[in-house]
Every structure is written in structure tokens, then in C-alpha cells.
Length: 640
Image (tube, rainbow, N blue to C red; front, side, top):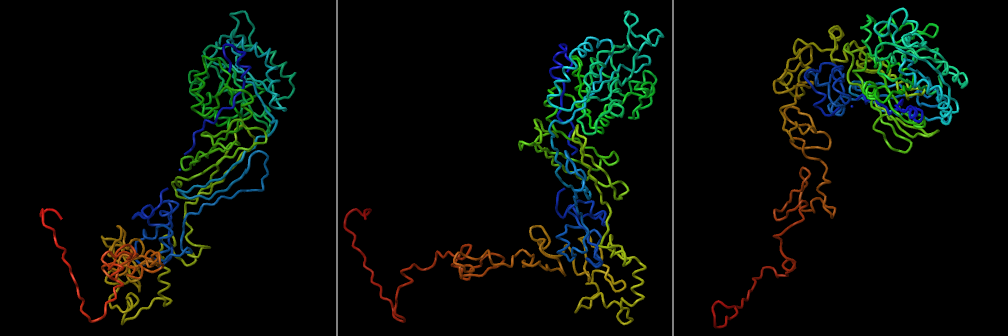
């Protein structure tokens, strides 16, 4: 922006940078994801992923390990756990439509998430016509800026008038800076403190960290008067205190930023800026607190606190919806570009028209939860295109940009408790924003309306506590007979307790733990290892293993549940099963006559020809065959 030919700066003043914020960054499904021997509670289960569910039904898989309660919802239902006994992830997105807005919609969104889950929604940003603009000039008045300051005095007003071509409501403000007024940044000799330019017989103003001169005003005459009376100052080292002054201009209310305006903070300098920790040279070690420290419009905290970090300054600019624009000498362009773009501060050169026609958003997550959540943003521009970054250019008045935003949760807090956090979506330079309120559900309720808890059960582990069990015994709910104490542990028609694979405890089977797999069921009659396999899966995952035999799901049959009950796959084109010449076995035709073949028994190469099949031969009458042998002519025996 401020080039060796400084007139170029005034022909190309402002820029709206493309968004430089990288996306915060997105679980596989399958039974293997949910099941694990280490899963012993509902909370453990749901942390496996949003596709996993926990069954808290009391008698589910009696005697089986707790880890068997964690599976895909469809698998739990197939194994006898209805939806009313299932705890699983539930993602909700609710939009508060009662809050009105003119630019950004919606402004308030509530989301319920669990670890591994994500939710998507749309935020729209409308570009208003003749949008009000606040432009604050923050100018380096060190001695090396004399020529540029003079040039600003002659054309600054003309430049401001050009801005009115794009905004009918332009307000301007002004402030100046040099550096921290302490050694080694300035000469602290008494004669130099009041006049840093005394060696050159020039009257300069004292060095200062930041001086707020003119609050936002629409009075161009006042702005002209302020610029023309500005004088230079001086300091010792090359870097200046630009970033320190920028933070004060961003956070101090006296600047007069209007709530409804697009806010532009223009820094003009010909040197790089001091960064955080540089103040140690002056013995200043206190970190900057990010607050306003102006007294009588002079920055009083300059000698007490370190320069702010670039990240801290970036946060304050975003928090106050301010665009930062840098007008620098060409020799310093690379320093500002590398230093500031790596920390997400706007840095670009372009026309005012582009500045006012670009729509971009930034996203901020609470510091305490930034590692547990991720956010992705995909803008849809008015022309239907999608941008790779978080901005759209060339947006005309009354056009709308839509941002497809997805929020996901990586994990829960270390204590495993539920938490509520806030994510802010800021359209850069707009005074409105979207608040996303996330309720992270990390614990399990295990049951509706406290049903489990009312029964003194432990629903999230699927077990009953001892006191409840004793109460059931005392009330006679468990039969206890001296003649046959364990009657309820035998299946009908069996004289073996718990199928010989467990022990009977208080009328209930406690199944043994086998090295081959899991034994479960009311009578320990079921397991996950002793039945035939289909495609490497027990009972083909289409049934359960009971007493060594597969009990197939509806629609399947066979030893390993590998055969569909339906005969639709055996129906031939004539509408008959296997062309009427066979049976449908396991979804395939088995022909009755071995002479027939084909997928539908439609082929018969060995069958009689059509003539033979219509040969009318009297019954019980011998067939007379007359064979006439042709005579071969004499001659060459090799010729026919």
C-alpha cells in the first residue's frame, strides 16, 4: 500500500483479504467398532462412536459379559433388545427463530452432540446496499515518515471522498504512534525526550506509544483539519510500535466504532513492528492484558506492558469485527506478509470496491474445548460457485452468501462429564454473528424418565445392586425349594442346569467364561462360537447360535443361515419354479431329472428330438428295420 511512489497507495487503498483461517478440521461403522472387551459401561460404549448403542435391558443375554451389550442398534434389536431399552447417540439441531436479523441468519443455534458425532447447518450473510463504513487511520509519525505524512495531508481528503462512491455513510477517525517512550527505543537524554529532533534544529513532538486524535466522525472538514496539523516525532531503533497501537485502537470505546458499520483499521508505516517479548530489552516483562489503557487519549500502558502477540491482536480484531489493512513501504511488504498471514491477520492490497464486495467468516471455539471439537466451513457464493477458503468475492448489494457449516466432537472432557460450550461464527466486518450453543452429552441416562433408577437398578451396567436382589428374595419373587432349589435354571425337558455351561445362583444362571467365546442366554444355551460359519461369520450374521445350532432370522434358513427362504431367485421366465422340472434349494434350482440343467433347469441336451418325440409306434409290436448298404464302385479304394 505505501509504495516508493506513494501515489500508488492512494489509488489502491483498501483490501478485503480472503479468509486466511484454515479449516478446523471429520467414523467408520461396523460391529468391530462398537465391541471391545474393555467396554464395561454405557459411557464406554457410546464413546466408541455415534453408530454404537448400549442395551440396558435387565435380562439381556443373561450371564454374558457386559461388553456384549454394546453393538450396532440393528444387531441389538435382532438379539432381543427393543428400542425402549437402547441408549444411543442422538444429534439434534435447533434454530432459535425468535431473534430477528438483517444481515446474518440464524443468530442462535443449539446442538446436542456425542463424541464422534457431527451436525451441519446453513448460515446466510446478506450484503446490504450502501453499507455504513468506519475507517480509522493509524499513522506512524516517526521522522522517516515525513514525506508520506505530507502526502497524506494533500490527498487524504480526496481519498476519503472517493470512498463515498462505495458507501454513502462513511465516517473517519485518526490516531498516531511511534514506539514505547523508554530506553532503548528512544533517547532518554532530557533534551531529547521533549524534542527528539533537536539535533536537526527541527521541532518534533515527543515519542508516544499511541495517541488517539480524532474519534469517528462524518465531518470531512474536521478530519482535514486534524491531518494538516500532524507533526512527526522520533525514536532510536528501526521497528515501531504499530501492533501495540492497533490493539488499543481495536478495544478502546473512545474510538467511536459504530455498531452497525463495517470497521476498517488502516495502519500506515514504513518499518516493521515490535512483537511480543521485545520489551524485555527495556525491562518490561508483564504480558499485555488485551485491555484499553487510554487516559486523556494517550496510551498509558505502553511503559508497563509488553507488546501484544500477533495471535492476541488477531483475537481482538475478530472479537470487535475489525478489518486490519496495512499500508507499508515495498521494502517491508514481505515482513508483514509473512508475519501476519501466518497468524490470520488480514493482509492484502486491492480496491475499495473489492473490500466492500467480499463476504468472509471466521470461527472461534472456546479455549477450554478447542481440542475436542472441529469446524468446517464451505461457502456457496451468489453465482452458485463454492470457494475453497471461507469467503466469496464480488458480492453485490442485496445478494446473499450461504455458508455450510459442520461442527463435530472428537472427545469428552477428561472427567467424562457433560459440558456446554459456545462456538462463534463471525462474518468479518459485520456487527452481527451466529452463536452456536453445543451441549456435549458424555454420560448415559439409560432409560426413559428414570425408569431404571426407580427400580434401584444399575441401568448403565445392566446389573442390579445387592439390596434390590435381596429384596426380591425376601418378597418371594425367586422360588427357593429344598427339594429342587435350582428349578428355574433348567430348560424345559432338560435335567441339566444351565445347559452344563454355568452355575445356578439364586435361581439364575451365571454362565461360564470360555476361552472360545461368550456363553450367554437364560440357560447358557447360547454362544458365539459353536455353530457353523457362513462367509467367516457365525450363522452368517443372520441368526443366533443356540445349543450348537443356528436359529435363523426371518427370511433365512439352512445349517448356517445361508439360504434365503424366498424362492424368487428360482422363478423362471414362464413363471414356474425351476421351469417345473426341479426344486428351489437354498435359493438355487436342483433339477429332478439329471438330464436337465441350467440355472432354472431349462436345458436338456440329451432329451429326444422333436421327430422322435412324435414317432407313433404301435405298442407291443416289434420294429422292423431295413438297412440298405450302397454298393461302392470299383476303382481307387481311397475314393468314395
